[in-house]
Image 1: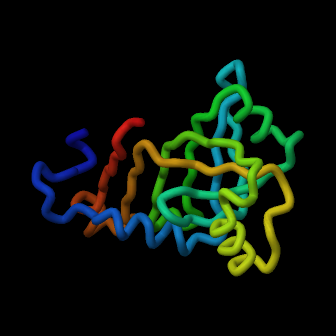
Image 2: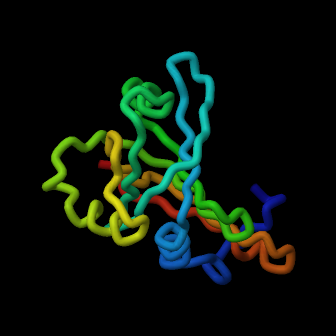
Length: 149
């Protein structure tokens, strides 16, 4: 959209490493889901960004888990709106801890315990990043995409 001032060339766009750094550094993440009627739900969670995916947990009876059971599309945002990453992806419930041992170890290092609830991995489809600073907003508004599986 022209009003966002996104340049026509790659000059000034943020590299994906910038987005990955913010996903890694965020302590809290906002998870947005929708229910079967399309009603949105957003909630903060703890999580860990590792190897191109986000691990988070929630109670099996939570609104997030119930929404994800019917609709795996999710939006994840970092806690800092001044240098934001908004990741659109697909959440997959993970029941085999052996398959995600590296994520669990990283979570334990970050928070001091392993995630107690139902575990989900979010794999990105598309992401957006921007820096709030008005002097840099236009050139820094960036979109990243992943190949569809």
